[in-house]
Length: 111
Length: 110
Image 1 (cartoon, each protein chain N blue to C red):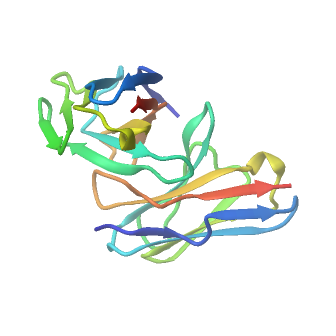
Image 2 (image 1 turned 45 degrees about the vertical axis):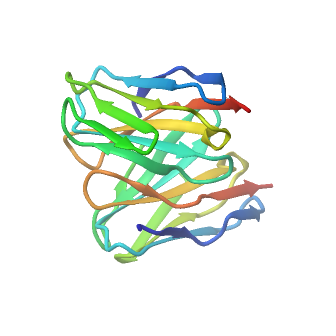
């Protein structure tokens, strides 16, 4: 199925730094979701966005639903070692049963 | 909190065996999904169900079947396991909008 364009593919940062990643698509989505996946585990939902322009926070995480409805970004502020993992975006089309997933951003945090 | 559980975290099966993967959700969600996840290929939808006894093929249904006899339970069946079905299998459930994933089953077919 269609994949969202997620970037960067991987990041190596120092503890305390801020991180930004984004997803883009040529299609319009009604919902944007951001997940974190630890090795050998299932993805855990971090943030859900439902309206164009919406900006939502969850602790040190902030995500925005792009105005064009074709993109979304996730920011992590003041990163800590437990932020290590793979972050996925997902978009939900008008036909609500169809989800599309980004390929993931692998985050490494150096203490 | 939404809870999606999968019957096994790790499974090792032989080629040709029939394999059952079970998924249970406790939030009365209408929609349930089965994905497989492989390095470099991301998450791929195998089957989904939007109601009891209803099922729809996803992007890669070949070699798989599903069963949903009760709302909370969605089973994935590998009729005759093959080595190319070695993968991480993820179940998800959804009310409308967001999806909630289980912990995954790492299946190895030898």
